[in-house]
Structures are given as structure tokens and as C-alpha cells.
Image 1 (tube, rainbow, N blue to C red):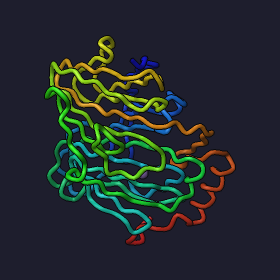
Image 2 (cartoon, protein in one colour; image 1 turned 90 degrees about the vertical axis):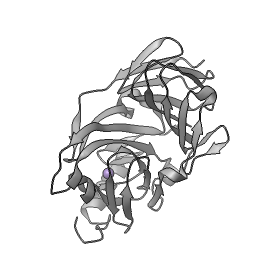
Image 3 (tube, helix red, strand yellow; image 1 turned 120 degrees about the vertical axis):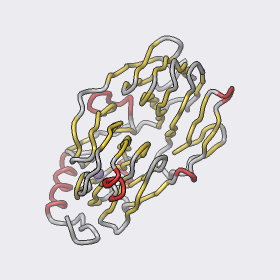
Amino acid sequence: MREIMRIDAAPAGHWVGDGFPVRSLLSHHLQGEFVSPFLLLDYAGPTDFSPATTPRGVGAHPHRGFETVTIVLDGEIAHRDSTGAGGVIGPGDVQWMTAGAGVLHEEMHTPAFTRSGGRFEVVQLWVNLPAAHKMSAPRYQTLMDDAIPHVDLPGDAGLLRVIAGDYAGHRGPAQTFTPMNIWDVRLDAGATATFRLPEGHSLILAALDGALRVNHAEPIDAAEIVVFTQTGGEIVVDADRDTKFLLLSGEPINEAIAQQGPFVMNTAEELRQAIADYRDGKFGVLPNGAG
Ligand code: MN
């Protein structure tokens, strides 16, 4: 079995804009090369928003050099970016945005969700790009829930949604630049499941709800994260209650990381260029001219 490298409890929360009360469960600053190609996992909510008139969210801001993957579990988000792309995603839907050479975008609660209020629960994952692809053209994939394979786990243990990669021959819809798996897993109380991910991949379990144990030993609570060794075979998960977690695996990108806020490059010089390009307006504008 793969060994546990570390278990990290969620740090204190912070707000991203006025719409995303997040806890950063994963950060390359903390967990380093063992989580590559993943850079960040922000877990927003679950939070109950009261009805409002003005949509909350995060206004126009840039990204360069990586991808943002937004997984909506509850609530609704509207997205617009400087390529003219945009859309609305709701429960079960995923938006996979390749910032590449650069986009400006905004991420807001939808007007309908703003008016109704209600439960909001969203994961945003940042996926690094290798140097050869950091300046790729921006790309936007909308992965609706009905396009994501829902696979019953053996022994009626629960359900697994394949967002990216492959589970038991079921292929996820996301197009990725490097090999990875992103699985959204529900295990029923009392159930056990075994997962085998590619040898050499980083492997991370992000617990979102419930209570579970990994490899028959370590108890894990909601909003905790487990980082495994990159080799060693399968992992086993026992659910002590109805449990919801993400399993992430990916081929590590063995390159230097230079990050400043929303820019993730390889060198300090590339960061200076990104900031200069943003100040010079080279990331464009949002479709209505705002930003
Ligand atoms: Mn963003």
C-alpha cells in the first residue's frame, strides 16, 4: 500500500472576493513536490448565503501559466473571461479554464442564486502547466454533470464521478496537458473501497464531508487532506459515515515554480513579465468592457 506522507488539517479560512469563504486544503508552498502538478485546492463552504440583490463573487482578475478547475457541489457560479468565453455551472458541473498565456476573468454567484440564497459549496483546484505549455492559448472546457461518468463502486460501496483521467475503463471528459486523475467519490457509511492510481503519480485525498480512515488506520475528518507517497500500490478507504472526498493523482512536473498571486511561472523574470503584461493591458478586457 502507499504510505501516508502527511495529513494536514485545514488552515483558518479566508475570503476570496465576497463570494468564496475558502479554506486552502492544499498548497504547493506547504506540501511541495509531493502534490505536483496540483498547486492549490481551495474549498469554499459549505456555507448558507442569505438572499441578496447584488451578486457576490470575485471581480475581474488575471491568471497566467496554469489552469483553474472549479467543481460546483452546491450553488451556482457564472464565469466570464477576456476571450469572450463564459457560462453558468451548477451542482455537479465543472469548469476547466486553461489560463495559459493569460486571461482576465470574473467568478460570481449567478443572479438566480443571489436572489434565492442557499447552500454554497465549491472546490477550486489549480493545476500547473509544464514550461512548454505555460504560454498556450487560453481554453475553456465546460464539463456538465451529465457528461461526467458516474460509476458505481464495487460492492455497492458508493459512487465515483470521473472528472479527469480513467477509472475502471470509464474516461473523464477533461482534456489535460499532463496525465492526471480527478475523481469525486461518495462512500456510504460502513463501506470500504480500494483505489489503485498510476505508480509515480502524486496522490492526494481531500476529505470534504463525513469521516473516513485510510489504509485501515488513520482517521480523517472533513476538510483534512492526505498526501501519499508517489509509489507503493493501492490505498484503502473505510467510511465511518457517509463520506465525500476527492482523489487527485498526477504525474509530477519536475520544474521550478515561481508564483506571485495569480501568476505561476518557472522563473522570477517570467513573473516580472507577467506583471508588466498585465499592467500594459495585454490580458484584454471582459466582454462588456468592465475590468
Ligand atoms: Mn480566478
